[in-house]
Image (tube, rainbow, N blue to C red; front, side, top):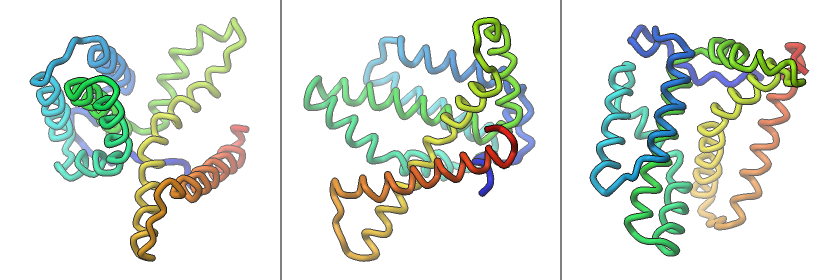
Length: 199
């Protein structure tokens, strides 16, 4: 079992940019997207800007579209909940915000080596050592959390494809095989970390 590797090698300006700068840009972008009072027009503009960043990173349009496709059930459930309990506009704006932030996080992992990301997080967390924080463990946990989103989405796609191949509609029961895959993946990652002496 290899550690999660979502990085796509390239020579674009995003690939060459320092990992710390990209992580800061993601944090600022997520904060702006969360706090800015969006309307029906600003959401597609934000999505278009993120798609343009994928182009700058040398990624074909199918890459962000595949990420959206993998997250489609999360998108559908979120949009439906907001649409029913709040309003259609809230569903559009809220779902658009989440999709945009997830696409930004995915772009970070696609253009940044895991080792570089962990190193930056370790540097940020090192001052907190005096309060008992373990920078290595926390940095690795955060980086793995960022990369786990598309992995779990991929598991959901596998479960759906398997049910289609058997002409079976799992419905809510699809949670069971998805949970099994997720737990098995967690065990494999734990074994890989232990083999590298990371505990």
